[in-house]
Length: 205
Length: 310
Image (cartoon, rainbow over all chains, first blue to last red; front, side, top):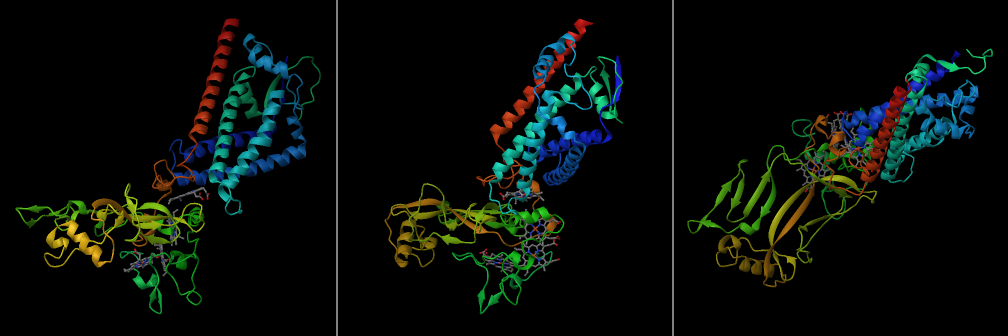
């Protein structure tokens, strides 16, 4: 028995895709001005990269506000509950046609692996890129004497971490009950959820 | 600001008070302040900043972030010797060759300049020359005839002071003049050869004998001479401060921010787009590649097993 519920609110979907677009463009322009390849002239890559960064900062500030006011930040509290089952699922049961051991519901949208990954993303990787990015541009104005190379290397490490995250994230998004299920849900907001015991749903609008 | 543009006269910048004309490259920098100079409190206007300030760029403020570490001329003199060729090499060691017994040999190059002369040796000329770059704090000292030189490598006749750790230093464009000249190989000093004078006086341009010429020159200059001669390579660096073309011809970002940009020989500091950590980049790309392979395998296995199940 499958039930359709509105899983992702309009804000979450907007936030998710805007963030995805910004991060992908930041990676493209960033590695361009890093000299890994040459799509744009250096000056344009720099200007675009900086503008995208400011947009991402704005979006993130907004998202932090949203998480705090809606209490949704609780989604990221790490848990070990069912952690082993999740690991077993992705490394073994998924090949046997098994079911994801963590049942999604609106109060707990994330499995233990997602919780810890997204938490690290938010408290380590985002701040790392933000701080090194600002230092990159303004360290001399702020009177901070720092080797530009140190700042740049840290910023590069952060970029590779984002790229690595992106690869895994996009791949794991194909592991829904169909390959495109999670993508559809993130676009429309509606997720089909397997119900164990039929009981009146408390789906939110 | 060149003759086709604003056509400034020399004294616009080379202001003078009591006949002390501003602007020369000696052991005292011409200016140490890089700021606007208002005629009433600072009559010196030799630096670009005297008239333009340190933040002259309006359309692209990112350029203003560069002026503390890069001299204005670095971006504003992309090439020099636009109209007339400039002398860039001079090899004295080939001087003194004659044709038909005692006639001077004179050759010209494609620019119409003398490229060989019996009295001077080989001369190299160039037009539209790209400057070379180094850190510079305004102080230049010169190698003098009494100084001992290191003849194992080209001798820097002008010593350019400053380095990247000195806050007064900025990356500055230079013309490098490369020579090969006679020196005292015994005492390891430069020498003053006698060039002109009557026949028999030792003057090189009449007798064409370096031994006699250097002996006479050193004696006149009151300097020692060991009697042992050689030719040593020399370099004379001169900062480029003139021939500012219209702003459209200034350097663009890629001239410096690329793997093989103009500053590729100035190492030891980080320029975005030029520098990167090879280890870090390799590790980063390989990790991401490994992840791609991993998810590829995982996905492949999922497809295979799901086919088998159905």
